[in-house]
Length: 221
Image (cartoon, rainbow, N blue to C red; front, side, top):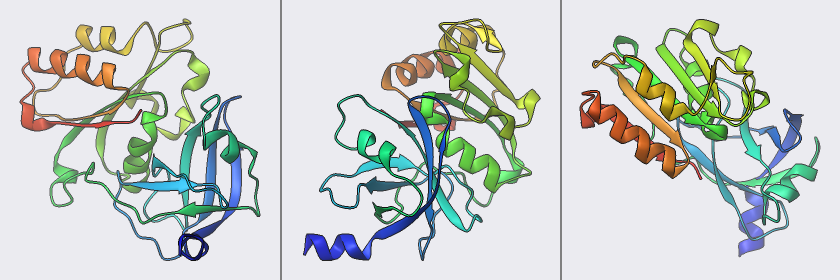
């Protein structure tokens, strides 16, 4: 039964883009999958029994689906995914999740998107799916090369915080930058990334007077 299910969920890989030595984008067939910006899919190798959750990176209207993947050394899935190429296949489950924008109000709101590493994925999808969105992005990484495809965003709306080099827009940790800036208290704030950043950012945002109901989070790894 498992093998039959996997065959039904196989999607052909159309393209693989390597962004750094360890990070890459897999583009695969959309087939009949529909999703809301911010949702994720479980993806795995075609002959394996394991899958992993990945926020969808591409826009809702794109005729394909993309995911942003960072290789985990000695991991069960990412080293295998890294070896795949166009023409190979991946197992893809139905899109799920509630980390999304309010469809009725999204163009009337201001958004602050806060991400670390590949936690930028759902925000890339949200921005590309909604060209008129009023947004700002704060992206925390170790080195500036991890500002994945940063030219995809309006330059003045994207701030790269690099903690281990001085090549970003801000040399230091994302949370330090967050403490130093003013935040519009009417903003809807979305957090995606590692749990330590999310916990620290929550405290900073609450201290700055951002109502709890305006803070939305998804732990990415």
